[in-house]
Length: 233
Length: 233
Image 1 (tube, rainbow over the protein chains, first blue to last red):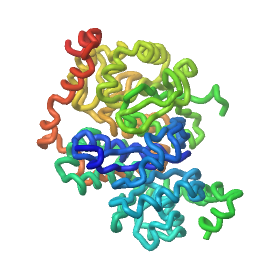
Image 2 (cartoon, rainbow over the protein chains, first blue to last red; image 1 turned 90 degrees about the vertical axis):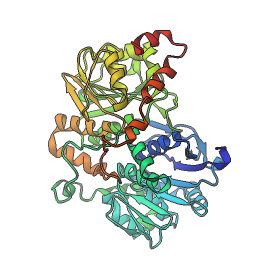
Image 3 (cartoon, each protein chain N blue to C red; image 1 turned 60 degrees about the vertical axis):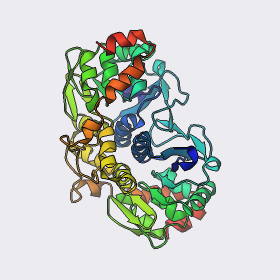
């Protein structure tokens, strides 16, 4: 399959993001790429120099935004305060608007959906995000849904951080079928075994984290009146 | 808490690795760090310039090996052919031997256990690895175990790729208790929902991948007689 026949899946990198949001689905699509079906993951950013994350790891994109003007799919990872601040990054939002128009799939992981919403792409659409940020997503015009991932037309959005792995496997299933999905799942040995089982949403821990997103929004809008208008609506 | 009171968890970066092996547990420990208990994740490498991975993403370490001579814990990610070739990287193996001696926890994800074994650290010990590489792990002197993660003394090793998330949560549980583990799990919203359910180990897909590790070993030992002696035993 030649380059021109391949379908490019662009993962968006920007400073301060949560690397697992990006790397989970990227790893899934990198295994899919090896099957020779023509899916080609790339990592796109404003430049290709290393940028910081919310961990000590630094990440560098493989391509600039300008080098990937027309991807088949685009997937936007999330993060905490830096992602909220990225709502004022017009170069990033412009790229999202430009590529989302012709793309077959426009996706996000975690608070990446806030950036899609901030770019005006999720108005009235059902969308997922990190559980602590559903009200913020609503303020940006989307309709938050408490699902692991949700599809609304070309838009597919995942819940927080690790949900990007499940969403990516769902996309593989849609694009390449069940057998290929099982192969990719074997490749990344995704047979989850959380030591304490699944999340107990009725447990007391969620209350401990109450106010998390409010504090992050406050930190993000400090000295940024243009963000305050959007995030404190 | 001062720097000297913190417990450093060193994640080892080397060229060509599988980024999800590293980023899964790194994200878990980065959330744990925010709780203020004094755990400090770092990413260590031979240098801090970006290195390639088995995806288009490039990663850069936060510290050099020399800057982190005495971590509380060290965790080694895996990969495919580049990880096998890293068995000939004496600078990397020397670092593992040097820090493993005093470390409280010596861990690996996926084929990272081959590097611990290659450094002579797993002789006769029970260890996990990517399911396709258990026989290679045995050739390097360890006793392969088909578990999501396994502890043998100070050594804790995980199965393939995504298993590093489960192993890291297990470590958080051991180090900080159940409540903290549930908080971290909420932070990364780890409530797995593989679209086709858990892996069916009796399914036909594993057979499709038969011979995978043999082909990778062949590719890794080409022109590397010193590796052939160890990996083709």
